[in-house]
Structures are given as structure tokens and as C-alpha cells.
Image (cartoon, rainbow, N blue to C red):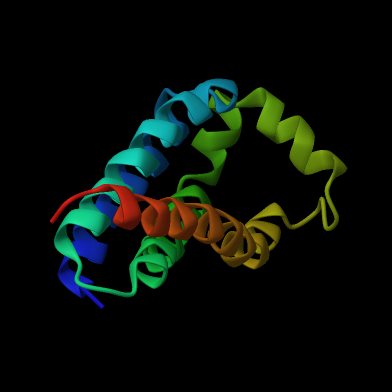
Length: 130
């Protein structure tokens, strides 16, 4: 495992966490995440000597920690700047405690996106020359 690389690439998650709180609407986030995932997968394939899937998976898990933490801390600002997210929270289980819901769902989303980034990283390791 290349923990230094994992931490460095997870900083994209920290940047996206603040971007989503202050100015990036939820509906255009995928346009940012796809290039980030491609770049991360390329870097994992280029700089790691093995365990490509696991390295990519762990990047997303640490991203989930960054994103969940920032979203919980800046919850009021996040909801004010993302009314569609506020509406979605009202329809979720535990509408009276959305921060707890974020805390519980953060790792789930981290795992889901970890499977995606892990797969991207594994595929990139088959394509990218060292």
C-alpha cells in the first residue's frame, strides 16, 4: 500500500468537500468526479507496485472521511447553498437528525465509490506502462 499517495490523492476529496459546501451544485459534481477518478487511477497505476484495487478503494474511503466531516461541520451552509440536497434530506430516514444520517451514510458512499475507483485503478494498471 502506498499510503503517501493515498493521502495525497484523497486531498481531491477534501477540495471537493469544500467546493460542494460553498459553490458546486450537486447536479454537476459528476463532471468533476469522473476526471478526478481517472487521474487518481492513472496515478495509482503509475506509482504503485501492486494492490491497485485496494489503493484506489482506500483513496475513496479517506475521501468519504473528508467529505463527511466537512459536510457535518458546515451543514447549515451546505443546506443553504444546495436546496435540492436539503429537500432530499427531508425525505431520508431520520429527517430530524441529518448530520447523524450523513455520519452513517458516509462510509457506505465511500465503499460504493471505492469499488468504482478501485476498479478504475485495477484497469489502469493493465493499460498504463510503468
